[in-house]
Length: 115
Image (tube, rainbow, N blue to C red; front, side, top):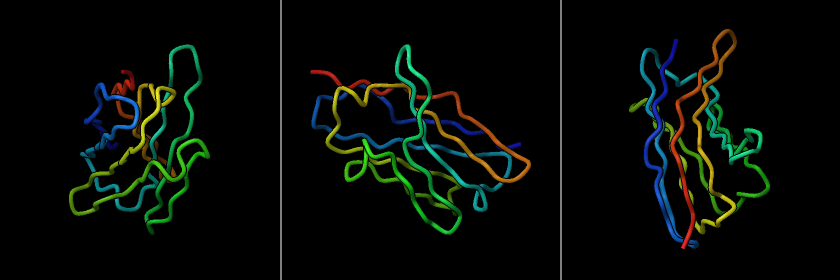
């Protein structure tokens, strides 16, 4: 089973940037579909972005053009670069890894966008 640990969250002003990291351990995630999800208070957990083992990416409409997901298989790490942040991006961000027969979630990292 893969373990996922997120980092990089924090408080940022509107228009600012953050880079989240998701470090995997226990096994290589090079063949996993990796993703970022977020959950705001009182709301459901929603997809933000995914990246396949081949590097194909998919984004929620709300973050297209502002967020970029990437992976470094040598470091067993996935990233989410978030630019032009808005208050509505405030949420707990979760890393997710999936392959047939295995799915894992991280514990989440808080991102707060506020002036």
